[in-house]
Image (cartoon, rainbow, N blue to C red; front, side):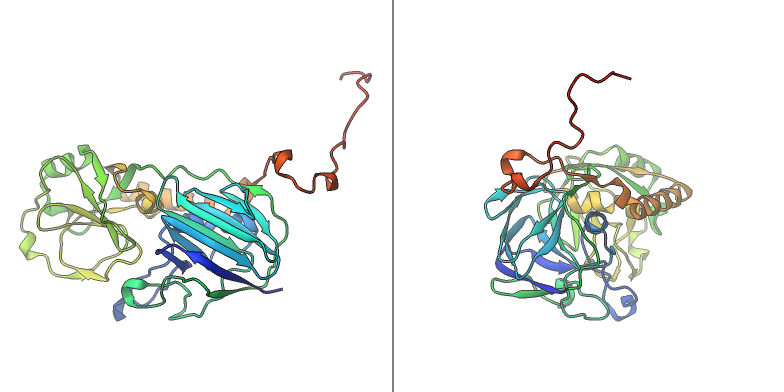
Length: 338
């Protein structure tokens, strides 16, 4: 049965996002979609549904939501404080949001993007084959107070599952491969790039994030010969002042700045989730190793449902405690121990 989710309050960066729209680069529209696509897979695993369904993405700050009918929900991505009718609920977990209940989600405690998934997915209008808002391209808009989102039919069942997420919310080491202009940078510059301790700049957004450091900028040779050509999420452009800039899901489709490298796709969630000031370091790896990493990551995501485990609940938060069977397997204490 389908349902609804009403937006009672929303932060400025709350949008509907799915895996994005492919096949439109030649029309000037980049893929877009969720900043952290791994979070989509985690939510799908917790609810037992397809990973291509749309969810609510919350950039730094959540909001307040109300279910029109009983909804199974999951919370993934950057951990945020969450409660249902005032009772705290776990992040990286699935829950029942009863009809009329209010789900309140606060600010991110680490990372940048949190996700609210609903059973059946968000069924907002499709544009160019996807439901994602692509603000840079003028497709869709941030969610606002009073909006009512339709949800799809729920083909699954059960809640109360938890998942231990991959730690990607406080920066770390990012793996990259050589790009089309990597050879323009002298070997000494490439080695310095790997050795530099970067910080995620404060001006980052869904289009990309700048990398700040204490040292000088990075200088290619023959940069003026670079022509504008297609670019994709993960490309690391080096701007005129030598600042590296990592492109993310809503990046432009072409650019003429030289690229010092390209982030391996399975490491992009770490870049997207890095909060302003988070420490980042980069390491070049061979293309063959990157291909192997991507294959392993695909297999891991496909098997993620098997990584979900029942939540261990605190009896003090269980309002219907008497409805639980608490003595199954009890013994008298006189039995022989095997």
